[in-house]
Image (cartoon, rainbow, N blue to C red; front, top):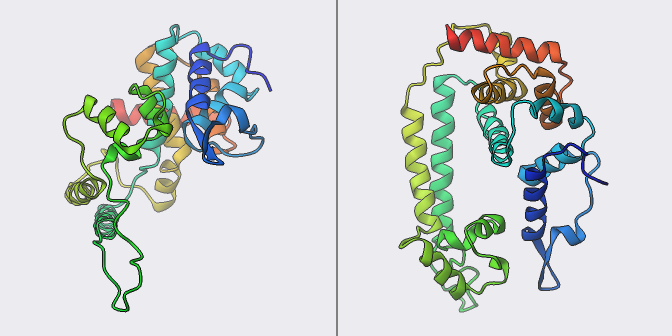
Length: 274
C-alpha cells in the first residue's frame, strides 16, 4: 500500500527511519521491521509508529493534510506537529478527577513503584536445599541498557541492538557522565508520585453534574482541544476543524462529526480565555 500523495515527506522519512531502526530478534539476529512487518488493517493506533501508519496511509487523512498544509510549511513544522499530536494524546489521558481520587491513584503508583524497585533489586538468595538460585537481580540495570532502539539511534548509536554490554556502556558514558539505575528511577518515581498526589489542582471550572463532567473528560474531547490549541498557536487563522475531526476519529475511534468537534473546541476556548 502506497503513501497518501499529499502525506508530508518529513513524516514519511521519519516513519521509514523507524522501520529500519525498530525491529525484532529473529533466530538471534536483529531484523528491521521494514523487512517483515505486515500492514495493519483494522488495529487502533498504539504508539508513535502505529500513529504514523494511520496518518500516512489512511485515505481519510488526504483532505486533512490539505487543510493542515495551509498552516504548516516546513519539514520541522510537521515533526513538531507529530510531537504535538503525541503530547495532546498524553494530556488527554489525564482527564479530570476528584482530588481525593487523584491522591489515591498517585499513592497507588508510588507503592507499586517501590514494590517493583524492591523486586528488581532483590539480592541473590541461596535456597536452603542447595539448589540453584531462581533470581539474581539481572534487571537491576543502568537506564541506558533499556533505551528503545529508535531513541538510541537518534542519539547516535546506529547499531544499538547489536552492541554488547561493554559497547553500550562506552557509548552511553560518552554522552553522560552518570546514568541512574532502574531501581533509582523507580524510587524517584515513587517520590514524585507522592508529591503530585499532595498538590492541589484547581481546574478553573465551575462544578458540574457527574454526567456533564464525564462527557467533558472523554479522551477524544480533551485531545481535540489540546491539538487545536497547538494549531492555533502556530496559525492564529487556523480553523481546520475538519482536519482535527479526522485525526480524533483515527486516534480514538469515535464517531464525532465536525460540528461536534467544533463545539468541543468552542466551549474549551470560552473557558480558557475568560
